[in-house]
Amino acid sequence: MGSNEFLQKVQQSEADFTRKRSLPLTHLIPLLLNFRKGTIQDELDQFFETLHGGKAIPNISASAFCQARRKLNPESLAQLNDRLLDSVTEQIRQRRWHGFRLLGVDGSTGRLPKTDEIADYFGQPRGSGVPLARFSRLYDVLNNLVVQADMAPYRTSERELAAYYLLDLKEDDLVLYDRGYPAFWLFAFHHEENRHYCARVKHDFHAEVKQFIASGKKSQTVMLQPGKQSAHQCREYYLPDAPIPVRLVRVMLKSGEIEVLATSLTDEEAYPASWFGKLYQLRWGVEENYKREKQHMEIENFSGRSPLILLQDFHAKIFAQNMASIFVFLAQWLADERYRKRKHVYQVNFANAISKMKNNIVRVFLQTSPLELCWSLMERMASSVEAVRPDRSYPRNMKEVRVPGFQENYKRTR
Image 1 (tube, rainbow, N blue to C red):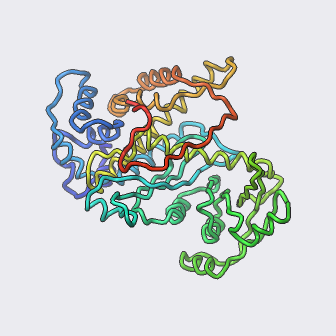
Image 2: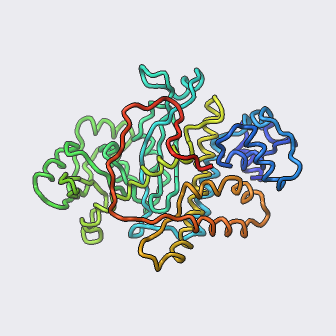
């Protein structure tokens, strides 16, 4: 964090963070990452108590903090997350599906503070007095890591945000889409970039899908033909509008409903049709991630009322959650060893792990040798587990009316 290269990415202007201040950059960033949920002054006091081991605490005001953070480019926190993920990929063996990194894509909306500046920047639905942001995630569903996260204006297309993710993907990545994403141009983009996908498609998505359902076949590779509108969209995005090969796979759900999956994995011997039902179920991880973000990380609970502050809070919480996920991943290895002779499989309690990361993330960042602390954290997380009972399912409890603004539906993590 102290390098000139990182300083240039952080600065809003060339003069920012160049003078010695009471809240330097090396303190500001760990403070922003510290799972903040309280008032600014309480968070400042906790931070410096942690920093100084409970000794004399510098008198840093909330005003000084607000002035310092105005100089910070929120995109630098997203880049810090990229560095974290690169480091994890190099040093920790990741879970994969037959050699692929599984990436779930999903969108949502986030409720924002009601100010004119925020409403102008992010927008709001017609007839609603509440500004909204368009959330989008590229999520590693097997390793529980947010690979890319967007908080964009409300009217931004979810498909377009998903398409931008393709530019950074590799040949051994496999993207999972739900029914809201499939479009001929998006599949054509995957085909052009040689990037793999598996997507649930609606029965009326394309004529070839209807014919496949009527055929009764379990799996078939078809040449998807672009319609007039699809061809026009391809030209808009500078993509070829030629037919593309797509494999269709039939999955019979427990309810008796037929699910159709479209995939670029056309080799039926290497990837049998029987694999795809469970493969697509893994996409549920990105849905669970939104629950973690909104309930445990309080992603909609902001500490300011300007677009700059909102984006800082957003990217800081994404980074902090990924840090917690890495510790949970390692703690799970300890738990697996500790409880392997028991009847049930036990998993580390993620909400409890987030509580343990509060203030300790500061120590991890600022201690010269944090290895002992990291090991202690993993040991404590591995002791807080819950039994996994497979094949349990409950109907979703959908609320008819949601009160505008941040809601606390679960007990706070800390």
